[in-house]
Amino acid sequence: MIAFEHLTVRYRTAQKEKNKTTVLDDISLTVPQGTVCAIIGPSGCGKSTLLKAAAGLIKPAEGNVRLDERALDPKKDCIGFMPQNYGLLPWQTVRENIVLGCRIRKNWQDGREADEARLQGLAQKLHIEDLLSRYPRQLSGGQQQRVSLARSFLLRPDILLMDEPFSALDAITREEMQDVFLTLWQEQHVTTILVTHYVEEALYLGQKIVVMGAKPGRIVRVFENPLSGSSEKRSTQEFFTMGRNLREEIRRISRGEEA
Ligand code: ADP
Ligand code: MG
Image 1 (cartoon, rainbow, N blue to C red):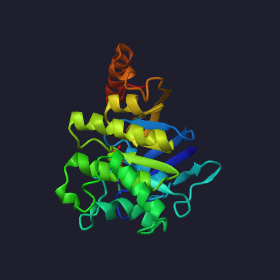
Image 2 (cartoon, rainbow, N blue to C red; image 1 turned 90 degrees about the horizontal axis):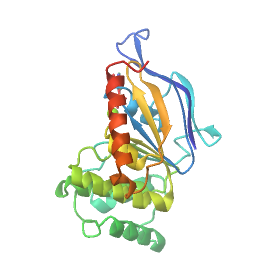
Image 3 (cartoon, rainbow, N blue to C red; image 1 turned 90 degrees about the vertical axis):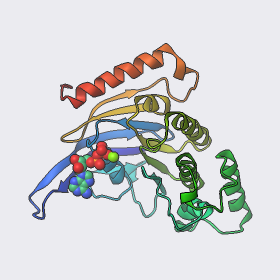
Image 4 (cartoon, helix red, strand yellow; image 1 turned 180 degrees about the vertical axis):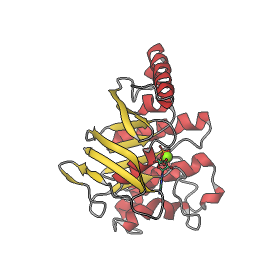
């Protein structure tokens, strides 16, 4: 379980300490163990900031982030973080990029049978087994995305944080990657926060959907989503209607009409 408790984040807008802007205002949210929470909201409302706080990359002004019943500790807890640009190192091969996270956590040994078998298994599921000795620049966007997913799932993290992971892909590849993600996720059931600006992606992947508003970044609505995780439901009238309503709600929030 990930829990944000009255999380407030301020950024300094000028050199002087007193000039700080509140970017996230009193965020309280619980993501139950083994579920996916999708976060959706207008650009600049603090979605990336929320993920960075969850990853321990920025320190909140107030409040805290808890993992299960204790304070999240990025040194001890294993956090998978998938940034928007895939986060691949251009000077390392696909294989090196995939094992990077495990290496950093000293959870990988070249040649160790169990490790190599897991890597091969993941590479096969992701259809990248023939790309392991290539470099990221020699891959398409969709392939880079698969490598990034392989890295995250090889790590078997306690929590997975994904920042608009599929947004740079074309629509068909994006839907394909959502399915690939679901297949891997259903094996590990890692507690996941997924930031997206696609309504359909939130509905397909998020058991819980959080709608945020901007200035200051805050939670406007949280709802349980019965339509997640099923490709059959994805093509129903209910899914379509929910998507339309959610899109309309986000539009209202962007215009500042949510109150
Ligand atoms: P989102 O991911 O929802 O688009 P961000 O979390 O990236 O939003 O940013 C939220 C707000 O905080 C924006 O107004 C942005 O300009 C501001 N911001 C982001 N990072 C910094 C920073 N390092 N210093 C100052 N302001 C920042
Ligand atoms: Mg962002």
